[in-house]
Amino acid sequence: MFNQKSTLDPQRLLVLRTLLVFTIGGCLFFGGMNIARGVYPLAAVELAIGLFSLWLFFWITRSPAPERWLLIYLVLFFSTMMLAIATPAASATVFVWVFLIPLISHLLLGRKRGLIIAVVFLALSAAIYFYRVHDQPQLMTALAIANVVLCALVLMALSFAYEHAREKTEQQLQALATTDSLTGLPNRAALQPVLARTHAQAARDGTRFALLSMDLDHFKALNDQQGHEAGDRALVAFAELLRARLRASDMPCRWGGEEFQVLVSGTDRDGAVRIAEEIREALESTSLAQTEAGAQVTVSIGIAVYPDDGRAIPDLLLTADRRLYQAKSRGRNQVVAS
Ligand SMILES: Nc1nc2c(ncn2[C@@H]2O[C@H](COP(=O)(O)OP(=O)(O)OP(=O)(O)O)[C@@H](O)[C@H]2O)c(=O)[nH]1
Image (cartoon, rainbow, N blue to C red; front, side, top):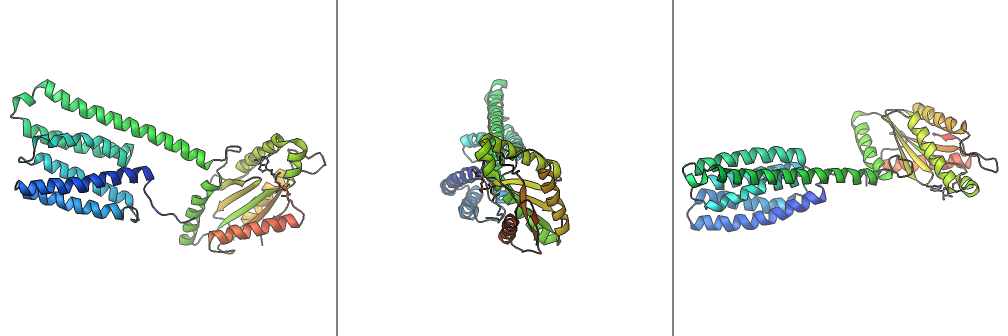
């Protein structure tokens, strides 16, 4: 769950695999045709690209660097296209493939890298096109040139706009999926990759980090006596308190219900206890959530420090949780760190 493997996003993987299927089929077909027509250099390149595409179809989900292979494939694919349009013996209609360049670049590489690759290969295609048709007056009229150029520009603008809108939607969905809607804090799904990164970095650099597991006390009583809305307001206020007390490099998160988790980087046990005590005291000193029975919502906190309390993330979470419940059983409103 905490392993960070580099993977392509599913949409790009689907586009790439669809394209690879057509590349494999197309390369075999055109390679065979070009052998029959005696255009051997182009046929050899096409067959080699076909075999490479077949291998990539299976390798792409296993590769540790799929983005790099994506770029290599695209450059090879477009370069083959350039070779095809530059080959005098190739069919005149081979130029229609050029119009796929903006669409494929944006779908596979995203807005910025897609635009750069598309501009480079469209410019190359234009140079090859004009070199090949410069002696055909009917193709060198302003109208004929405007048709080709405008069509390419429209496709470029449309695919750029599509990718721009798609990236924005993806960012919004990502934010929704990783933010707790009540408190606005990151949620459990958001903490996991950050925790994995912090853990990997601490293991590399020999530094420490602490996990503070927190659970609000007497929260059920508050809900029962003053209503769910009062409970919600207390959760929002506690989230505010966390934001106000923590440094930008620390990461508070709503773990679920009235449980919170705080990841504090570059700190030892004493530092973590200081922060936890500050938070505990700050909540205690607010009259934010007084229950009718006179109890006040406070917070119990369990601390685990890497690597002293465990080297694996699940062990640290377990230790922090165990200490949190020790704090509860010792009477609540306290910090347990060892
Ligand atoms: N208002 C509100 N209540 C929630 C939310 N999520 C969980 N709860 C409530 O939090 C309460 C947690 O109850 P308990 O686990 O018994 O915790 P507690 O009353 O704080 O008891 P101790 O932790 O032992 O002090 C339950 O009543 C849940 O319904 C939420 O988003 N909003």
